[in-house]
Length: 116
Image (tube, rainbow, N blue to C red; front, side, top):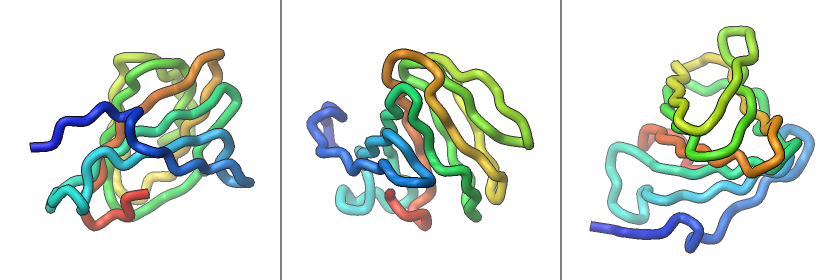
């Protein structure tokens, strides 16, 4: 068993053209012996966003705190703490922080996906 506090893991920061103000952490992945899934946490700063992208795997996300919007199915929808999302394979998607606090999102992907 592994028991951790996510903030104890050093983040990988993304702050370039397609992504702005994103800190990502792999909480549980291949290095832990997780053969089926990878659990990640994304912190998106106010005004920040992930890249608009697609990939051939599904993923599930849960908003831990903050507020923002998610793009999927060709439209933007509001996000806030307690919301969960299912992003099917090959669906274009993106998240952005429209609030004044960090948008913190837990994300699960299958083991075949890159961990970050």
